Structure formats: C-alpha cells, structure tokens
Length: 472
Image: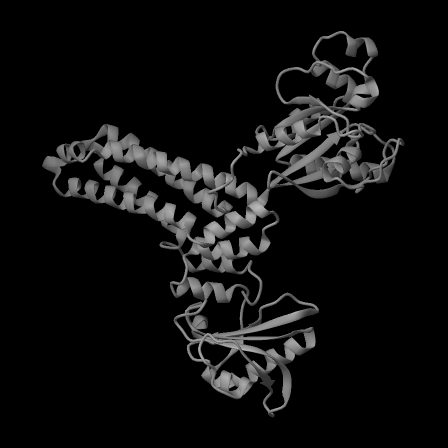
C-alpha cells in the first residue's frame, strides 16, 4: 500500500454526466512538468488563471481556470493542480488523458477511490475522523446532517476524542509510576485521586457516546416498517408521512404486492419508511411473495408501526370508554401481533397505531405505552406519530453541537467504555491487580486512538477510503 502513495495521481473530481463546470485534479510530489505541458506556462501559486488547456501536440482541448497549490499548502499536502473546464464527459476525459500523457515520465496514474483524502490523512492534513466526515458531508441527506458533518470536518469530534485521550494518557502515567514503585503504589493512587480521575473519564466517554449516537442517527437515520392486515391503510399512511401520492391506494384488499420505500425528515433525522404488503394467508402466488418480502423487511427494521383498522371494532366497544388493549389489536389484525413477538428481535419497538379515526366519529381511549390513534386521510394525529418515532430513535431536541459518527466510531467508544469499566473493577481491588488496571487503560487508549487514526492498520484505511468517490 505505501509505495502506491508515492505515485502522482489524477482523476476527474466532479460527478459523471453533463454540467456547466467539470474539474480534473492532479496531486504528487512535483507536478510542475504537468503544469508546463497542459497549461503552457508557469502558474502563480493559489491564483486562478484563465487559459487554454493543451494536449501533447499543442492543440487546444478546452479553456478554463487552472490553479496550482504547491505542497504542503494544499488539500493533500502535496503539489496539487486543479483544472476547471466545461463539464462534458468527453472533454473531461480528454483533459484527464492530456494530464496522464504529460505525467508519463513521472509515473502519473489514475487515483483510486478516496485516494486524495487518504493522502491528506497520511500527510497530516486531517485525522481519520475528519477524513471520514468528508464522505459524510457529500452523502448528507438533511440540513442537520450537513451541519454535523461540518463540525466533524472542522475537528469538533476529534477535539473531544483527543481531550479524552490526553486525560487517559496522564492517568496511565500515574498508574505506571505506581507499578514502578510498588512499595508506594497505594499512596500514589490515593494522593493523585486515580479513582476520581477514572470516574471523570467514564463520565466523558458517556457524554461522547450520547452525542455520537445522536450524530449517527443524522447520518444513517432509522428504518421504520409499516405492517398490518390488508386494507388497514398502510399505503395511505406512507403517503401522508411523505406528503405525496407515492403508493396506490384502493379499497381492494391486497393492492400492495411489494415494498415501497420513502425517506422523510423528522426534525432533521432521516426516517426510511417502508410500506409492505398486507399480512394474511393467501392463495395468490404473487401476493405470497410480497408477504414473504414484507416479513423480511419487518425482521430487519429499527421500529415497526403495527397498523390497525378502527372500523373493524364494534361501535359499542369504541363507545365503552375502556382503553383499547391487546385483545382488540388481535381482533383487528388477526394473529399478526403474535407473529411479531416471535419473529422480531427483542430490542425492536412496536407502535400500535389505530387508523381511520375520521371514520368512527369517536376518540378511543388507548392503553399506556406506544399506542396512538390517527387518520391517514385527514392527517389528524400524524404529528403524534412523528414524535413517537423520534422518541423510539432516541432523538432529543436541540441538535446543535452534534457531530457525525459512524458505526466504527460507536464500536470503538463502546470498547473504550468497557475497558474503563474493567479498570474501575481492578482499581477497587488495588495492589493485587494493579498490572491488570494498567493493561485495561492501555487497551482503552488504543481503542480510542483508532477513531482519529493515532492507532490503526492499513486494512482499516483501505476499507474506509474505498467507499469514497474517485477524485476525492
């Protein structure tokens, strides 16, 4: 891997297709030969210059802006040449070919996905968490996600991790000193308040985990599946949440044969809502396939909206004033609730939603817990459902100060918290397990360093940057 990173690289940095402007980017230890060949002149550093881009025969390929960023004051830390021309597929490929031809003597090659940002990381221009936030910023699907990705890119997440890392390092120094002088180890630990420092570290990691968990929601969102019997109004509810007629709505049972997914925003959190086929026994082969796919979506969901039809209940039951209970849900949806209890993971929440409130003329009482009544037709009660979905996702109001987090970060933070918990246990036992306390702190430091790239492996870098687009 390392020899490849010494080669000069080039790539088209803008998305494929037609556009007003397209960019070709070159990076390497010295790109002056490519600048001279393609631009026909020496460029003033960091100044946009309008000129003609030339091929190997001196013919004009395009006209546009050329900017030379001499290293180390560039995105990658190397010499960078950026050519901004017209955004046609053919002209950009011709311009890239001109750069590759001019760079043949110095071994210029096409960049791998994410290699420009990878070099920025390896050359110390950003840490690993900041590098990942570049891709998160590009992929952000909501305004809140954009702001959080920018905070990570600016080093907000890394600053908190590094602060914790510094505190952990100082604590390790105290414990290692106690190991070096075993006759004084208990006094050293008491005088330096190692227990108090360790408690403070655990509080810090919990706060970072909370922010990271909420930031992860902004990045990935939650998958919510609408399940229920045929004609309960699942497609109508999807349309109501999306604010558009996405699914075909019909009084005929079994209209929905396959899943239909739409991503919506609730307080900046992406919510991926999936409408599925009505769950029932069917002799129709196509409908059975749709029901099988529905169960597949249900089993991989983060939350389930189990939709019930209020009109299936007797009018005297609705007017009785007694809260609707599980027996009523079983009557409205058959044995679906029982099947969910068997097939779902234990941590997947199920929201009992009673639909068609507009058709019954009364406001039913509901049992305590995640249950509500609404009308997908009139939108009555829809805000309550949105609030419940955010609550199930663990979202709290006030997203300012959050930073983007990935599953890799969440796993590393959980590992750190586990080792700090182990260190607390060993500290209470004091002298006999002081070496084990030191080892737990060392493992916690290593896990924390993996977030910013202070500790890591080449295969981890390859996995991260391979997900980037080429030219970034």
